[in-house]
Image: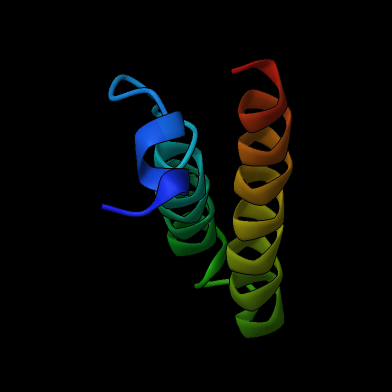
Length: 62
C-alpha cells in the first residue's frame, strides 16, 4: 500500500458523490429528453459537475 491509501479513511464516501450526481443528471435528463436533446446532455453534464463539486467539498473535510 502506498502512503495515500493509508492516510485515507475507509469510510470516505466522497467519491460516491460523482456517481450520484451523474445518476441524478441522467434521471432529470431522461425527463427532459422528449423536449430537448441538448437539455438531456446539459442535465447530464450539470449532474456530473455537481457531483464533482460535492466530492471536492467532502474530501477537504476528512
